[in-house]
Image 1 (tube, rainbow, N blue to C red):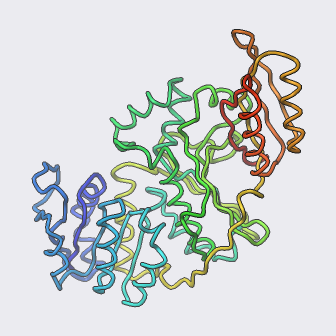
Image 2: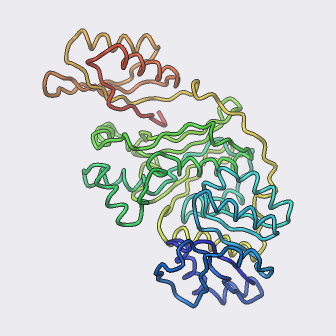
Image 3: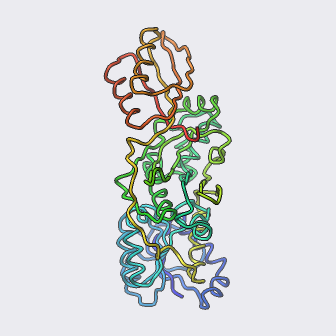
Length: 419
């Protein structure tokens, strides 16, 4: 049984350790000896801390011209050349295991069809949830008619940053540096901080849960870059935790997907996730609610998820290549409704405060709670919690305040979930 490995970074080295420790077990499952074919890397002379004698190459043709290779494990990451390699492998009737959420989110439907046509497998347990076996649980216990909504903390990096900001009372920039040193954040953390990573993952999960496919460029996304320590502390005082929440739900027979920093009640199980942990809350129509949690980042959690796909490949467990996916009918974001948190600074005058409240009323935004704090230089801080309002009403309000008033500043506004 010959396996090719594309990429030898943190997850790749972790996977090699797992394979090396479990060679006898894998050989028994495969009913054959396991051989790791040449490992494809970008920098062939880079020093690597790996156990065992493996051939390293930067020439992909050595792998794709080898007729004995049965399976390719792609751990390069990014869009190219990963997409080209995965597609080429499937077209050559080689099964693929990948941890690449961008590829599966963007090209998953196309690649699944190619896999079915060529009677091979495409598995990607490690693309979402790190060490949590989400797809196997979903496949075993649910069908697309069972699930009403899914809510998740799907990015370990941002969850670590928000947790450390609160626990250590330090800024986001300070925590980010620490996260990069620990290997929880990339040197370019844009995908994590701006919500792209979580968006790719919720697309993949929604496709599994609802048997629908979702266009990447049609979905709403917002990251944590504007979340301040002050916001975290205020939310905490009001009984909330701020998390980067990924959600997908059915509303009036349409599908709504969203990524944004959100205030969650402290008793919500997702609010209690600390550090790099990920979690998923599944709400069903008639089976109750289910919660899954576990480590979402790091060398071994992701490597273990890849290893799980490797085991399943040998024992022949079915994957979702056979699902008949249809295009999702998306809910217009402008009519989606949320409760909101506002952090507003304004000149401390009765007239200005009265004008602000009038603008809320004009947009039919009902204020549920308001907290006033005196600031220096005759300024006032208002923390406002609203009843449910439509997204377009929120945008209209923010636009009006920014255009009409020089002495009112919206420092931040975030959604509230579960009110």
